[in-house]
Length: 141
Image 1 (cartoon, rainbow, N blue to C red):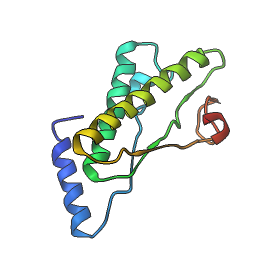
Image 2: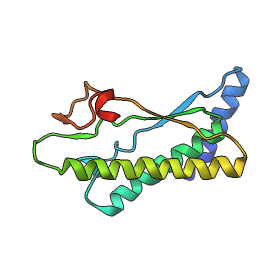
Image 3: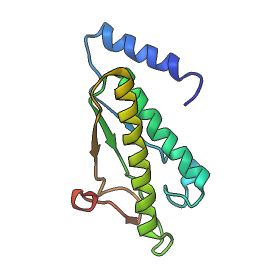
Image 4: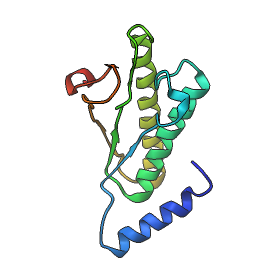
């Protein structure tokens, strides 16, 4: 989501074409930034809006690169101290982010007359958080 993004994507598309490759999937780690130090689903609406924008941007990148899959990687969806967050509210915020990405996908696909991406959830049971909210496929479903 910087001015350099178009340049980077052009380079990726050129490299894929030059080597006869196709982009199969994209993923987004929206929680790398220090603003999510307490937890990824921060209580600040501005921080959550930033995370949603990153997910929507990943959808657009996926379409631009011709990907078929978007993988959600909530590896850091956890916290270090029990009771530090309201898990139910955190999961609602997470669902809001996924819903916003799906809505963006439907809109981008309709404009381009393409299929939507396949949205996949990837559990991360061995992440370094003390309390992982979605550690397994069962929990994610």
